[in-house]
Image 1 (cartoon, rainbow, N blue to C red):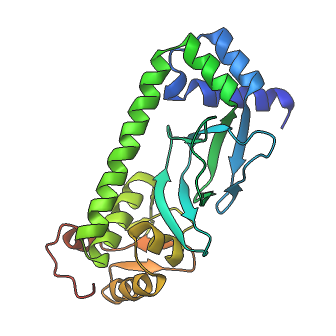
Image 2: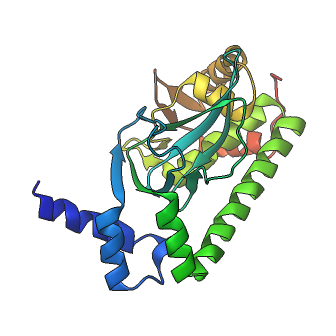
Amino acid sequence: MTDETLTDEKLWHLQHCPLFSGVSKQEMEHLRDVTVMVKLEPEDRILTDPDDPNAIWFIKEGLMSLTYGDAEGKDATVLLLGPGDLFGAMEGAQTLDYSQSMVALKSTVLCRMTQQQMEALLNNHPDIGYWITKFSWRRITRLQQRLAEIMTKPVRVRLATLMLNLADEYGEDLPEGGRSLGLTITHDDLARLVGSSREMVSKVMGAMRDEGLLHAGRKHIDLIDRDGLVAIAEGRQAAETP
C-alpha cells in the first residue's frame, strides 16, 4: 500500500467521524497530516506513550474494553467502547492509583491526537464540545445501567443481556442460523464485564450450552437460540444459577 493510499484512507476515516462533521476541508487535511491513525487486531493493547502521557484517542470503528487493575492484580472491565467514543487523559486530570488497560476485542481503527491539537480544535469549533459532551453523557448512562444490573440481577440474566447486546451491535449472522458475537472474547472478559468470577461465568455458560442456547469455543461465542436468551434477559425464564 502506497503512502498516498494510506493518506487517503486516513482522510476518509476522519471525514466519517461524527466528531469532525463541522470541520472544513482545509482543517480536515491538516488533521490528517498531524494526527496518527492506528489499526489494531483483536487482543492488541494501547500502551501509554511516555513522551505524551496525555494523548487523546477516538475510536473510528471497532470495539475496545476499558479495564482497570489495582496493585493486588485485580481487574475490573468498566466499559466497552465503540465508534465515536474517546479515551485518554487531559493535563490536570487527577492521578489515580490503578492502571488503565485498553484492549481491542475486534479489528479496530483509532485516531491519536495530542492535548494541544484537541484544544486547538475546540477553540476553532466549539460545536465539537457538544459532541464530546454527548458522548460523555452516553458513557455515564451506560455505566449507570451496568452498575444497576450488577447490583440487582443474577449472573445468568446479566450474561444473557450482555451477549444479546454484543451480538446485535457487533455480531455476524451464521450460515446455519443464529448469530456470532464476532469478537475475540474469553470467559475472563465476560466475568469482568458482568462483575462476577470466571468460575461462575463458566458454570452459567456451560448450563446455557447444555440447554442449546449457544455454542462457545476458546475465544468465540455463537448464539443459537436468541428467543431463549431474550426470555432469560427479560426475566421470563427463571434463573437456575445465581
